[in-house]
Length: 291
Image (cartoon, rainbow, N blue to C red; front, side, top):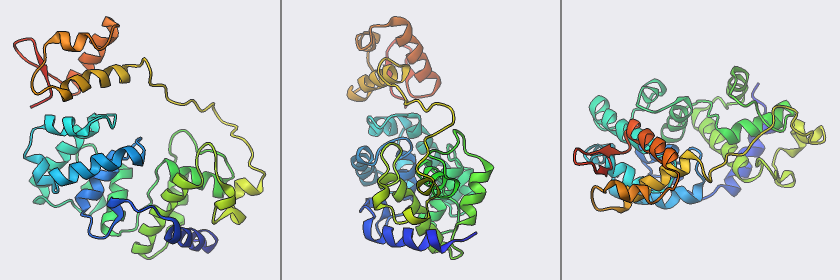
């Protein structure tokens, strides 16, 4: 169902409005693309930019990261959030060295087989690093397609087979053009067709948008609740990790205890960090980042 009503205007809009992001520049390695995709999961571009730049300067290739302990990756991850992504990226670097001679694989299946790499990331790296033809469905693309084609304000809570089929049907036949279409749709969702305040007046496909033509009907599905952070286990885990990142070496338990007053929640968060491999308890009672 390739439809030039959508493809051509979106590609033209992207050519004029795309952000100058370092992982999109010519010469960026597939490793740089992979790192960016992992970092950008549930994290705004503004927060990723400085960390990605520092990361690539320190570890320009998978072999460089794999040669260091996983704790170095957790420390360099800083406050991007969801620090297990740092561990998965470290594991992927090791797998790339062991299985692929240090080169990020180009096939979707080989990418999908790397530790912590899901269907979205595999499709994104194959598309953006290797100019292949894959449907790349992130939150932004799913929202654009829901409005543009289905006439819904928001997509389903969980990705459906129908969404994948629709996205695949819209892919241009030429692989490099398909890859550019995928990133253009992501950019459209990030800059124009946003979740809360879509700028329909600036949309290149407004004349064909089913949701806009229907009068922008409000969401009629389950209530959409924003994620809370203050007071959660996630915040507690972040505070504990901040202590370890900022320390030159292992820390005593008291250094962790003083950053969170709720002892039950603090111990639960610490146990979770240990179980996830993000914190290493030492035999002398101190704690450190994983070695």
